[in-house]
Image (cartoon, rainbow, N blue to C red; front, side, top):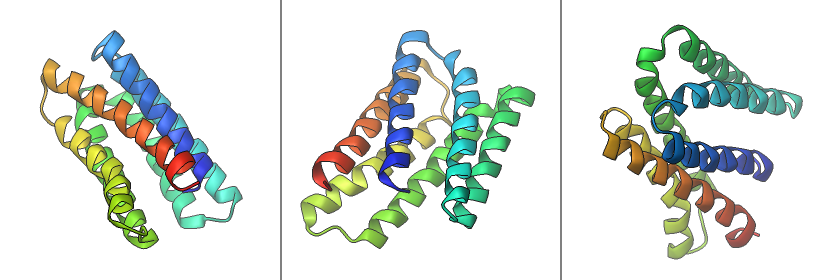
Length: 154
């Protein structure tokens, strides 16, 4: 993903995390719709940039997320958790491929993927405390993506 796409994902994470803190668990239905739309848009952007594999995967995932939110909302926590775990693994791959210059950059670069995976795992456990922790993790992960893209890797 390029910096613009990272920024879009980061802003979405911050907004969703904030809305989760303010509005509670009901916001996840709306977040699922927004996530589905965002993934489709990111997929189309990738396709326009001739990143065929990533574009198709993102677009299909976006449609799947949107449909699950609409047709099977009772399982959306598990699907979103799985998607966050997969996205975190994808981010780890990107960090390994980029090979940051020093230990501090490695730690900062791995922070977001680890937080993303933890957030995904937490979605499999249904409790209000976990939901609040997940919201805070999403907000922090979003800010770390922005800081990493615009300050550290400037």
